[in-house]
Each structure stands twice: as C-alpha cells, then as structure tokens.
Length: 366
Image (cartoon, rainbow, N blue to C red; front, side, top):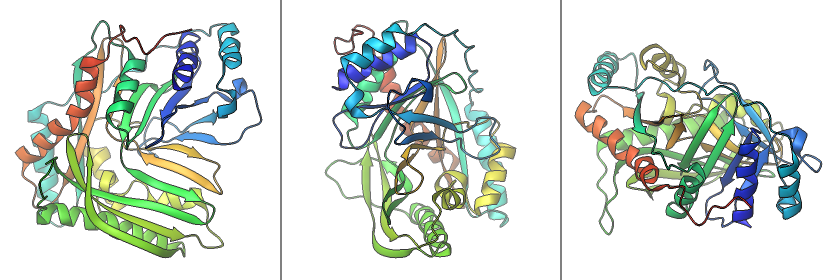
C-alpha cells in the first residue's frame, strides 16, 4: 500500500495539486493529505502545518486527510484523470549563513544572555547543497522513512510553501480523548552507540527550561499530570538528546488551539523568556524560518491530535536545497561547539540528498 500512496502523491505532483505525504513513527504504511476539493469522502481529520511563529510571512496550511480505504487504484485513476493546474512560481529560498555571520550573531546573543536580558536563545542557520541532477524527492522521502523509523517523516508540496522534506523525532503533543502526551526535548550531543552519555550543566539547564515551560502551561490550563518520566537519552540519526515524557489529563474547559498558542514556540525552538526569545530571533537571526520549527501533523481539534515540531528539514528549490539547522545558546555556550552541533545535525539531511536518485526501483508512477 505504501508504494501505491507514493504513486498517488507523484501523480498529484504532476497535476500541480497540493499534498503532504507522511508517515508517523513506527508505522509501516504512508498517509496522504490533499486539498479539500479533491477529497472523495466526508472530512475526518485535518493535516495542519504552522509556521514558526505568528510573525512569519508563512501562513497555516490545512489539508484534508485521505481515509486509508481510499488509498486504492480507483483513487489513483481519478487523480490521473484530473486536468493539470497552472504551475505556480517557485517559493524563494532564504539566504545562506556563513560561519563569520553565525559567529557575529552568537556573540551578540551571548552578550545579552550574560547581561541578564535572556536565559536562553535559539540561533539557527541555513546551509545549501547543490541539487543533484538525478535527485528524486520521493526516493529521498523513502530513504528518510527507512533510515529513521522512530521519526515523523513528511514531504509537503504546496504552492504557498514550496517543497519541504523532513524527519523529526520531537513530539509536540499527542491527544486521545482526555489524555495528552507531550515531550520535552532539549540538549544535544553526538550519538555514542554502546556508551554512556555524560550530560554537561549546559544541556541539563537547557532541558530544564523546556520542562518548566511545559509544566507551567499545562498547570495554567488546569490539566492533571498523570505521569512524568525522564530525563532520559533519546537517539535519532547521528545525535542524542535529553528527553522527558509527560502524560496529562485535560481539564473540562480545555481548548487545544488556545493551549498550543501558549505552548509553542517552546524554549527548545524559541528561547526563554518565551516572548523575548522569539523577539530576539526575529531581530537578529536574519531570515524568515517559515515552516522550520513550526509544528505539523494530524488533528480533529477536539478529541485527537498527533503534532510534531518541524525539525530536521529541508526546502527544495530548482537548483539548490536549503537545509535548516539550529541549537540552543546559554551562558555556557562555546561558539565553535555550537557551530559544530549544527554541522552534525545537518548530516541527517545531507546524506539522504546525496543518495536519493531517480533510478530508484521502489518509486514508480503507475
């Protein structure tokens, strides 16, 4: 079924119709969300993609989730029968960050942190990889899915957003009726297979800031903490993180959209204090993150949600591919170490770009 789903996505691409192809952690089959006018059944769940913050030029994207019973040859033939839409202009990519520029920004952040204006800042950057002539985004999606089974993997194609590929391990929020699961994820180092991890004060403090923010927001909304586990090690790709898992029970007056408005951006992607950290990003980072560090996933906005922080992703242009990476800056940060952390994080996407080829035998338009 998953290759049939890819065939549907490939055909939508040739018709210039927006879609998102995705797979949840530990699932084997792929899902797809499409523009509402092409949904062949009553709407059930919404696929929701948000920008990093409300001040971005990017806007929320809402697509309708295609029921798995309609992932069949009949729907594929229907998509084949559609008239192609006019192709929209490519969405421009942001400017690439040089090491010199990155160091200037990180020193500015550190000055204000040491002066007590911020507790934590997040600095991200963009790096470019030339797009191989035989690059195939569907093959790249497959390779990400196969290599990182514990992540949420997606391929978004949309006229307002452009083309985005990502594989993120960071759960923002999962909801089933009144039970809400959430993860605090902050603190990063290179993966050390078969070895114990030693976490420095810097990483522990980063993690505590995110945990405290989550607990404060859920307490404000009257939710009852049922379970807290962590911090523990979480390995994904070539890196490891500190993670704490929470389970809450919602209050009778709980409103998902309202809570998400205060929960996100968390200190893991927006800094601390939360509002001030976002202001610093907008003032100093030098580019619009758009959908990088926003959240993405399925929801019905009341009883269910599976939403992830949109990390470890790339934006595909005509000739180049922009890779977005970042990290947390605290008073204990060393600029060279922070730069190397972004290099390490970028390897997840870089290696898949270099191996994704149109010659793949797995991906065939039927």
